[in-house]
Image 1 (spheres, rainbow, N blue to C red):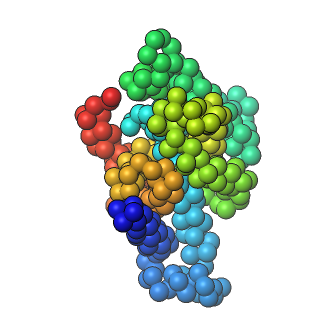
Image 2: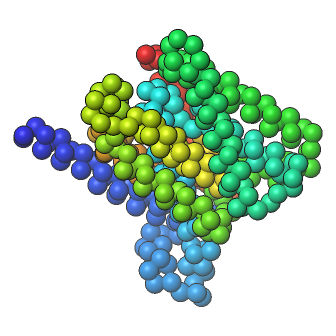
Image 3: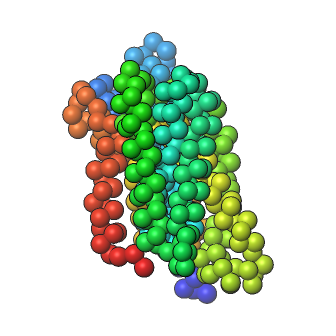
Length: 335
């Protein structure tokens, strides 16, 4: 009993510490930029807004929205990655690694090229469709053969599907170069220049994904014990897998619709959370959401200051952080 209590206390402390890190990251994101703003002034702008104060106006017109969107995308991608790793039992599973993001981006570029769509609502549904088709394609391709859904087959299937969609996307951009500028918005991956109006239509779907993901924590734990065990305990394995797939599509597709190709958050964060509190998804999923938001906020801060006054696309920053981590996990070997 004492041992269990200690474990719960450690997990609780990790969640609280991660929450403090998130608050710091949020304030750092709002404070950092070409116009430096102190933390105290940032808090003043948030809670006692003065319309004639230039720093307060900067906070409310650009940086606050940017920080909120980074939090939303970071949490969504981290949750999607944690669920994908649980579903496939693959440490390299993530929306970008297994082609989910590439599928969503291809469908957006396709719609811009051939149908001249420019509505965020349209992009949202198109991103969801692309993410869903990519996920189904990877799952189906990985299940072919005797050793269905083995880790190595899932990685190979994801790499193939991702390469296919990326090549299709590049081909479309070559065919219609005039459209290139309009889709750089998604290809580079960024949270700069986004308005709250872009987030609001997608937010209900993301909220539904977050809540469902957190409610699935206990069921995911049972599923990881083995399908036979899960069925013996009365779990509807097929329903859990379908719900996980829907949540991943909602979170990954919605993130791409807002921020574009922001990779590696879904790969890195679940491993960090698992290292801190273990494999219990009742704790792992909320901690992943908090850490995902913090990591993307801090990546955006670094992206703003590394070559100031210019900015590095946040997708480039996350790739620089995530690539060595990906190589490290791959070298440990897939079981």
